Image 1 (tube, rainbow, N blue to C red):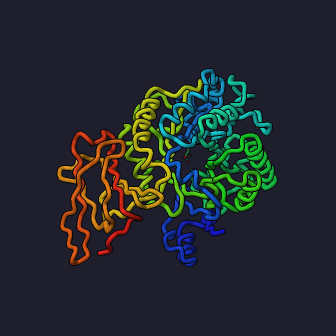
Image 2: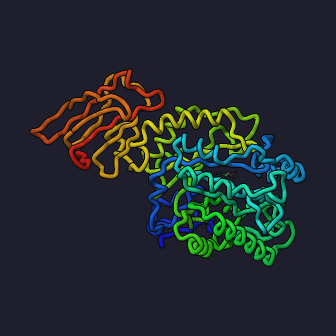
Image 3: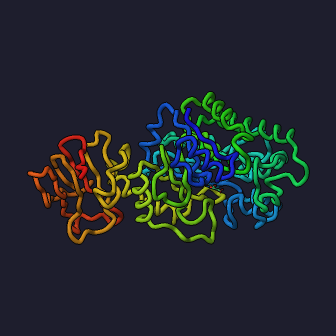
Length: 458
Ligand code: GLC
């Protein structure tokens, strides 16, 4: 098991430790989202092939007036105001099979639902606390089971988000963080004890945390557990190695994201496309507008074109996109979000052969844009966001070119430019992309090669 933890160390020490361990690429200060991951998962193929997942932030905050959980933590709503939102959490129009139809139409291969966010409100009828959809809201029933069933009914894999930290639990704010705390952390009554530290309360909290996860594992058998909120305690305090072992014992093939203090299976950058991809499997989580949960005032929706761009930027670097929607308290997805998902679906279905199950493409020195390769490495896909003035240029392809076409479109003409056979120079492949073949969101050019791709070094 290869793992590096940094949570117990200040950033600079973590950097020194990384260098000392020969992991210079980890020597930069890391955010939780970039924490290194364990690399011993026996088979993550479904995840790496999937490319697109849908994230759903749904809870008592879905009334739409403020943010998920943070409105409580940051004092934007008082404790009472925040939890009073449970009274309007009706789930009256919750039809997860409609969600599943929509997500599938968007081209997603998995979906991740917030089973419990930082506010501690559980969407399933947990026996560990009354703060749940059945006992604590007019929804009056378990909402996670029907979600899992509906997703599986459409062939989607099931992910459940779970916040380690729980700002509602009386025993949670009982133990201080290892190492340093910021002044605002120190002052926050939801995160840290205002009086002396109470290790017994922390033990009780860990029992509760494990018991809820056991319920989730045994009842819903998620394919993926998407953790969050590890940052207020160290990996040692959470006993992450033990938790990882326990989760893998309950669910042998489960995939864990990295927010396990570094003990997860894949990296989880958030809200910003990484310039250089993280090492190993990864997934970018991103909102369609600027909010995770439904917020009535947020109309800053990304366009279909922007989402296609994000998706292809991720895929071409070997990553997935986990695109977030925020349904309203009644369980309906807003028309604006639905329109983006359906628009995305037009593109993903047309370009399915390039997207799913493909590999990261060729280095940018050869093609100035994102590219992908099929698993046999004998079909190269070039993603073009813009309409070329001249042709589309690719340098250094040694292989015979068998055929060039637009995925889901016409065949294209091509030629070799500056070929110098005497010097073994394959020259530049120039593909003509006529305006009529350009896709409004992103055109994918398919280049069929005579064998596995071979690129000229110099
Ligand atoms: C952050 C936020 C949280 C959100 C999550 C999604 O960690 O705390 O509100 O659920 O990101 O990635």
